[in-house]
Length: 253
Ligand code: ARG
Image (cartoon, rainbow, N blue to C red; front, side):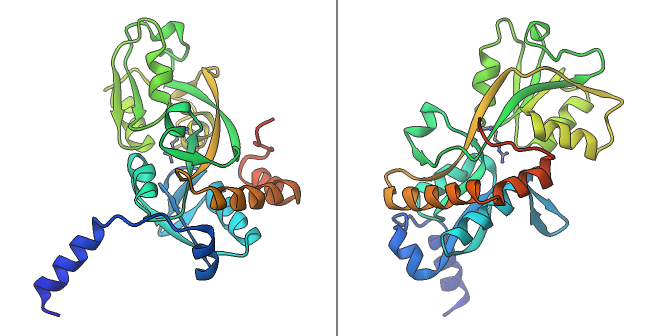
């Protein structure tokens, strides 16, 4: 093929829509295509060139329980559910809170963990709902945390950034007064960057039930993966991974 023709083919296939694969097609291929973000530590992140985290380990464990290998796709958080319905991969594991709005677009397994939403600020800064009056906050684009923040009476500007790394930078450089995210992620990132002496985390604003998504109506796959998740939750695998990453069991009670 000529170079231009090859380029054109590559370009067209990158925009191609395919029907989501059925459970039978996935089984026949032997490989489950999972997508994540890779910038949400310690759930899904890169250490050098290695994709790591609780959700990476859990995704592998669920696939194994279903008799499948995993092929990972990593892309920006706010594009993950769109690619799912375009058939680019079979499921998404990226800490998506199960919300009624998202349930219109995709189907979720039962939650694989529960977590709080919290605010972080520099010492003396706003970390409670009451203190957010007129204050600005950095939050990741496309997250459920945005609607939680919008519900705070009198809140100042809600500024969205592509990732929690960018949110942290916005707070540190004084572009926002606070940073909102998933509690365990905030705690991990603060520790990782050794900013414990400069930053404080506030009490929980809410609790989110986070789940793995499959394409809307992909029922057989949803049932199969839910059974595999249940197995992992019950056979000790989940507890081992949760303790390893968090020192505690983070399943929804
Ligand atoms: N739980 C929040 C949500 O559902 C944040 C998830 C962010 N995930 C990520 N991989 N950055 O929107």
